[in-house]
Length: 171
Image 1 (cartoon, rainbow, N blue to C red):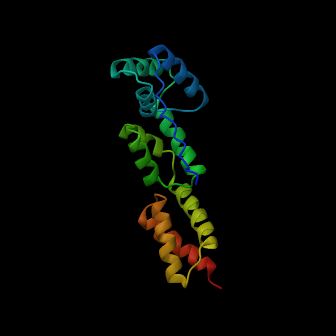
Image 2 (image 1 turned 60 degrees about the vertical axis):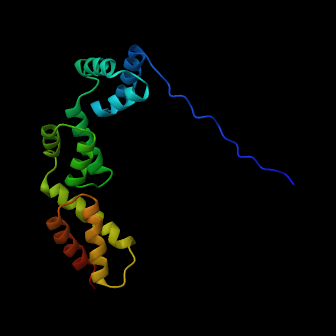
Image 3 (image 1 turned 90 degrees about the vertical axis):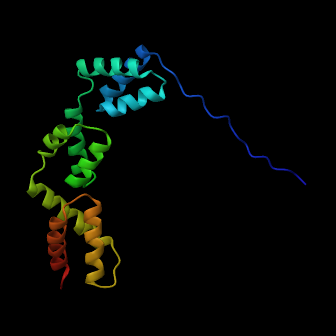
């Protein structure tokens, strides 16, 4: 009888970079897409940079405007609002997780108007109502409310828009 051995590979040693290499790599990354300070520091930690070297590289990136947390927060709000259909609460929580300053979060969320938020929520809930299986309207309402809340919208708005969506579905 044959014995089957599992093929295991040795864990990959983390790549290390010098501060100069890290600066060049981050400049290249930042030129392609917005990065925040937290993301850059995480990358530098993975590359084995000391805290002192990492903070020096980060300061240079900020000074040369490759990294700007305010600009990042604004871009993040636009992206999550337009493409992911998120509400203000979920966007703010995600930015806090990236350690963006609270004042910058508030400024970036200032781009959202209540009308945009409501119309986006209505669009999201209407699509969800079309693809959700349910036993009765009470069941559908519960599912839509939970979905709207999971997307980061306010409870009052979710309840109001859910009622509107349900009224539109009635024969």
